[in-house]
Image 1 (cartoon, rainbow, N blue to C red):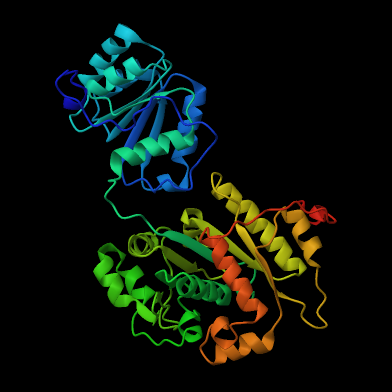
Image 2 (cartoon, helix red, strand yellow):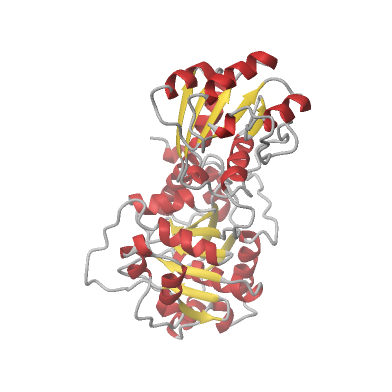
Length: 428
C-alpha cells in the first residue's frame, strides 16, 4: 500500500494543518454531503465507537457505507489479511512513538494502495503529526473527537475544493391536507428568487394533485415525473430541459397532476433528481404531498431544512406533534423543523389559540398567517403569487420574512412559551 508505505520521500497532501481537534461543539451546517465511499473503523474505546456510529447515521453520510469494529489497529490487520480494504480506514490507537509506527507498518502490508487512513490518537504533538503525514497518513485526530471532526476530515479527503457548492434543500409538508403548505412553499420560492435575485428550483412532488403549475400559471409538457422515472440518466442537461421558467430566477419542476398512472416510488427515487438540482442552484424548494411514505420520509430526512405547516385545530396539533417528534428523531444532528401556522382566525370556526397550540410543541412558529380568503383566492385564480396580487399586504411581508430566515439573511430567535401545556392530550 503506497499511501502507507512509510517512504520518507513520499509526502501526501495533508488534510489539516493542526492536529488539535475543533472545540466549541458540533458545527455541522456547513459540512457538505459525503460521496459514495466505503469506510471502516477499528476502535479501542466505546466513546470513539459511539461517535463514529452516530456520524454514520447523519443525513450527510447517507451515501457512504460505514462499518464500525472494535479492536484497534491489530484487529484491522487481522481483518484485512483476508479481505479487501475500503476507501477509508479509521483506526483508534493509544500507542505512541515506535510502537505506533510498528503497528502502522503491519497495517500497510495488508492495505491496498488507494486506501486512505485516518488515525485517532492520544498524543497532541505537532512532531508526531508531521511524522505521520510524511508517512502517508491522511489525517491524525486527537481524542476525544466530535462528529464535526469526523465529517470534516472525510469531506476534505473526498470532496474536491474546486467542486461547486451544493445548494440548500428546504422541504415543506403539511400536518394535514388542505393546510396550505403547497401555497406557502410556492410563495417562499418566489420570494427567495425575486428578493435576492437568486436562482431557485421549485419541485412539486405531488404527482397526482400538484398545484404549482396552476399557482405559477405554467403548463409544461414535461416535469418531475419524467425526471423520477428516468432517474438513472438524470443529469444537469436533462433536468434543464424539464424545468419550466416561471420568472427570471425561478424554475419549476412541475408535477403532471394527472391520474393516468399510479405513482408508487421506492425510498430513494427522488435522491438523484434533488442531487442534480442542488448542484445547479443555491436553493431547491420541495413541495411534499401530505403523505407518509418511504420516499417522503427520505426527502424529509435528507433536506437541509424542514418546514411544517399547520392550522390551529386539535387534529393538526396531534399531527404536528407527531411530525416534529419523528423529524427530530430522524434528524438528530440538525436544527428543529420550522413551523408555520396558517389560516388562523377563520370566522365561526372553533380554534386553539396560538399560545396553547405551540405550548406542547416547544417551538415558536416562523409566522402566523391569518385567514385571508379573498387575497389567496384572487391570487390562485389569476395564477399569481401573493406578492404579485398585493405586494404591500402583511401576508406578503410574512413570506419575505420567512424567506429571510430560511436563507440565513435574518436570524430566527426561538423563545420559550409560558402558555398552558396540554401535552397530556398526546400521551399514549
